[in-house]
Image (cartoon, one colour):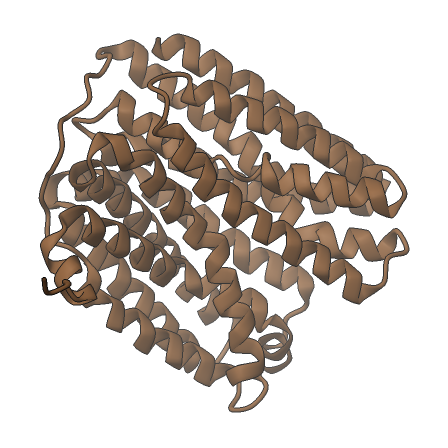
Length: 387
């Protein structure tokens, strides 16, 4: 019997196409900000900005993502996930190409704003595609794989530094990124639906619950983004060698990718309680942040494992849970909760940095732990409201 080719699988199996399309759309729409972070030294030298300027640039990206999330949900809900994904990829490619020739720092900020809109469109379109085209029994895994693509994209940005940034120049890295994004357009699947819809609790209670869940996501994402942004500098300040500090971040990112996929796989094995698991992950992550504040390498390693493995492993499970609450309108529903997550990505690192500068890293880690724990409590409140 003739075995199907990979191309045939993608053409014939709508769920497989949906997952591949969601992953590639996600990578294409988040790569601009990760490339800016990875090549910040070279870009900052040419465009004359310092680490504070980098922080502002990243905040602009997440702030625009937050503001454009709900409008993007409306666009995807009306136009469909395929059109939304393609629009997001095209905007991301435009931003990448623009950054490749940008003459100044203000133009870079404007282009990262365009990339923020692309991120909102791409994320929500991917959520809608997975909700519509992946059977209910495999949606948890699909959302986990999709969210794992985000930390996975950091690996691409990291590879771009020695491969292009340090050889041909940082502008060529962004040009290559634009070409790569355009190549991902053909992987966006058409709109469609397979598998049964999941019954939902309706009414105003669930809509109000989404706002509370989004606020929980803001606190959790703010603390978790601070973890990935400041871990290396904090570890070096505590006496760890820079090379080892970098390895802890690599290990944490690897744990995060693995936990997101395994968490999604496990979510398909039970019918309820997903938001409670998210709350538990945030609580466990808070313990990890406290351990990072404790002197010593063993506490640091344990904190990194808990912080990344629990405290930053929940976004896919959160999207999955929200889609189960609103299967008839997954784009609009996840747009509300994603607004909180993006706002956390904008506000969390800046608040953490200001605290660390004023009172030191241990105080900042304790503050981030309190924020993550409050996020866990709000997640339970939102779950109770939804039920």
